[in-house]
Image (cartoon, rainbow, N blue to C red):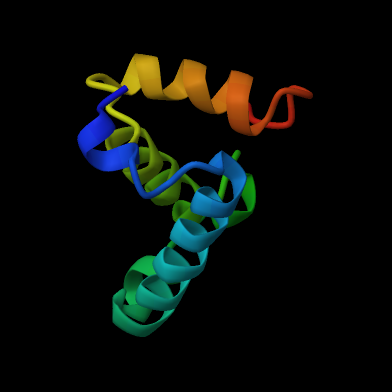
Length: 84
């Protein structure tokens, strides 16, 4: 973990909720309808906003790969196995 990014973010869940709120607002206001309403969205495992928020959360916490971020998300944010 990088202390440069985490010194102001001590509570993991509060940080993730803030990121989710920000990403959701930006996504709904800036992403074109053509992308939001693309085909087969009913088959998604996770919404786009959740994936984007998880990647940002991983960067803030100093994870350097998508694999490390995924493992951290599964074990820290969704320990009950709710994240596919």
